[in-house]
Image 1 (spheres, one colour):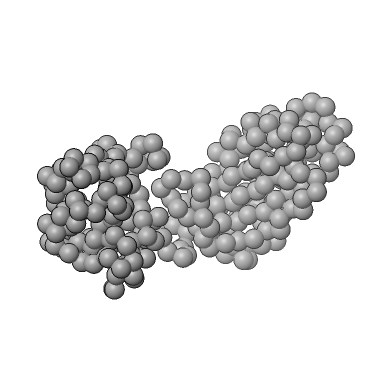
Image 2: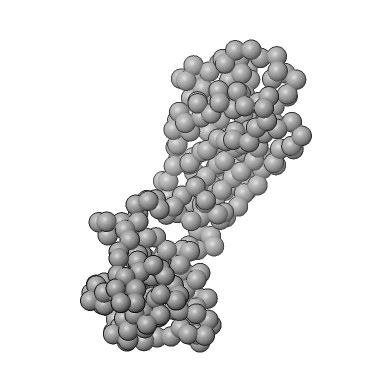
Length: 275
């Protein structure tokens, strides 16, 4: 790779990295990432950086990534000297030749260590892996904010009850409740890979079924109790899962009938008598 290709590769790998915590394990949030101090200019502590690089990388040479015209494969000792010379001007990255480990240095004389994972464009659902169901009702208007609060308080328990192996190819099922009157519902779609902004470590979700349902807003306005609202919305959600029966062939044998049976059972267990 020339300097430009290497620097671009580093930038793409940086965003796929899992950064390490105090114990050298993958940090589960940004706040858990371990930052090390090495200083800059006169305060630069070369012995700390030298030891960190030797501990992190077993190869004698590493990729030193500074800019699109100054990135290359260099001996580890030279990498330390270059960091000393440039760190106060630019952020600097280091990767091993197999692009599985990474270090990132900031302008302020701190650095973090990480591992680089490969995220394929598609994959098969692991055998026996339970379906992860997620219900959402986050986008509301003033008149439906209370409805969102009522049903969201029950979503977590329902999701746990439906965390079972239903076969087929689907790993995730996301169902949104549209609580803005002028928005149209999403039809069912199945995607092999989607961005996963809710997870710090898992950058993508695989084999995702996703659609939304829209209630009758006039009917919704006439429901006065929490139980009545839940009965209506959860009944609407149950009815919507007929789409999974219709899509069973596309979902490679997903057992939609068992899923719907479990849905009814879970609602009854949670004290929600759906209509």
